[in-house]
Picture 1: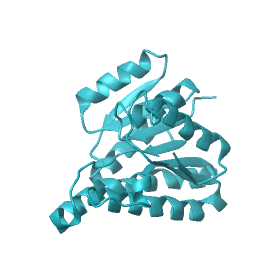
Picture 2: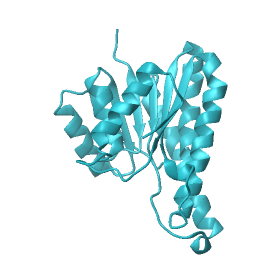
Picture 3: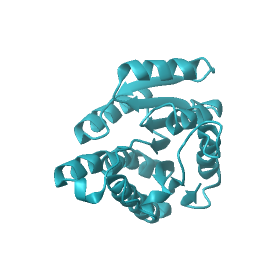
Picture 4: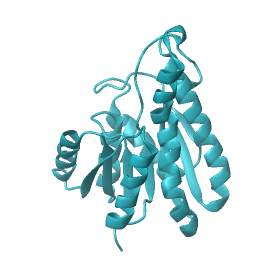
Length: 215
């Protein structure tokens, strides 16, 4: 039997790559998606040095067309996505009065538009097989918005609602959807160490007993 496939949209040295490593060490093939080819090559090499089968594909999480092309390439080259982890976000500060509609909509195209686009690429095949997992990186800022990070607060709130409504819709079809709402700044050596957070994603995938974990 071939390895299952996990796709991480929003690769990076924090949560994204540690979740990739966790799933990879548990027998998954890994696809990392990021805008930067140079960074992707570094990330993929790091996973392979751990004995993990990993590949990188460039795409812009703020562009539906770019994501659609990336997932088409994944399906053609690597097969059906068993686990999708959406980890992309625009981390910009600013009070609501400093926002413009254009900036907010541009940020939302990554924070929630990319999440929906990515999910829509994998759901049809998961529906056919009546199994699959979709996980989103959220934040407690969705429930406790910060005036200094108004765009991020809005984006995480929208993504949280997307995750929970998808969970309700897809559960009867055998597809599990969950979100990990992180309550602090991700940093190695702290309570928000990305390696520890990655364990939460794995537990959520394995247990499928709740649709939101507040970490």
